[in-house]
Image (cartoon, rainbow, N blue to C red; front, side):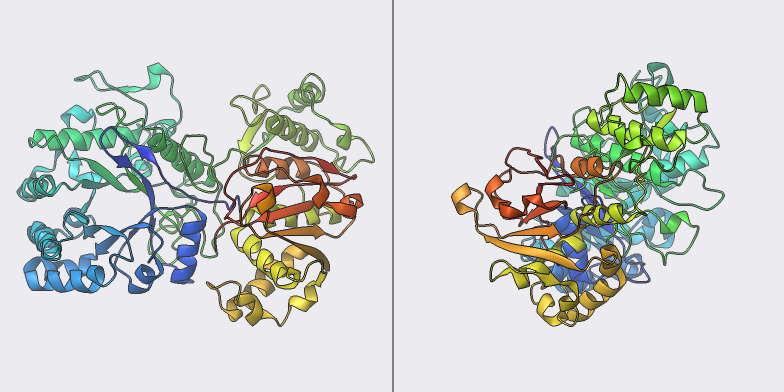
Length: 616
């Protein structure tokens, strides 16, 4: 699940004038919508500190209480007419959906409607009234300085968006936009804008290059130049945001900040949407997050990062429309990441903020002779240990140039710490987010389980608590069958889960990961206070098998842990260092500081590693 992946997201880039942030939209059009506590658990695990809801769901707002997560609640479009026509209705809405939850739930913004001008034009005349009535209710409760009020717009309200300096709002909406902008200016609120380079690209009929839409680096001669300002644009996102800035200035509003309330890229589409792919979604969202965190700003306002909400947390399989409409999420309904974000920017980001979740593989259709030459280089001057590829060794099969090249390419890529340009090999290699390792053999299954245990929020936390139950008395052995039937006891260690969903999770997910393995040996290590680690519960998990590491699995796991490892004192191993199996130490998230990286090998087939647990 890519540390988990995911996941996703967070925080902390600073603009010239105020903190800018990255958040995520939480839609609920799922056939199997996670419970509010599961939603919040995922947000916490991914360190997501800003969320936007499309309504003011009571259960989710209650689950968000005391988390510190900053929340944007929304007035749905179907409630807009009533609120825009009645101050009392607006006050009741605020009392029921805001006052009932603050301050425990950190509501910071109210989004009134969504893309009203383009999707609900009959409500346009009362839009500004709705904002004013909501704001008046906040003033009456002395919350107007804490909670801002605005309304998200589609970027399609901007006409002639390129060059940005010539952009203006659709003039038919000026009777709404002028008083709206006056309201935003007087209340210190932001213009909310939904920016979708994917749609701009799709609708351009080839005029907009894919690389320009995805934030990919462009040579200077490929950059778009605004002939009026001579500003250079390297991506659609910046051009649209600057078009909005220029459109506001055309109406004499020059000091209203912009928040991008939706932006993303679909990971799957139908036959008419060939560029809705996992790789493109990964590329766009990773580059967008980096763009914000690096405080890049836009050509018109360099260094002023634009706060942005990624669209969206979950794939919404119940949404109507095309395949792509259902596949904008970072995670599926089970909290499994759709892809692993590839980030290198500064700041604190999603728990999957590493470059170690990408892989270097032989390119499909690559010339066999060129592949062989690249393989020879990797195993020679590239100093990759290719001995596992020899006949009789674990990675000999499948005996193809492509398979052997993938092993060598990926080993080199990881050895070089994923540096740019280290996965090219004269054009016969490519980067992917799909793990190329074959986990079909018995040996690799154990490592596959271990890898996913480390990188999966649910499996990691569940196993830790299962082990802790039987580990409290000191050394002990837990047979997996002893876990069965103890769902209520296990659930008592997992306050966010019931005994039924623990049982269901075991039967549908975890049991399959174990692949017939029958024993785990937990050792309760207690507190590490003497070692300066703080009040941390540690559980030593020894996968009791003589499975050998094979192919790239060890490299993969080392890579996954590269930024999450801590020194493990040798004396913790005791007599168990002789076992030919991986050893992992899981430490709770109360660990107060990172210790130095140490990957000392154990025996023939194991190694020590320590990583922090995600919060449950």
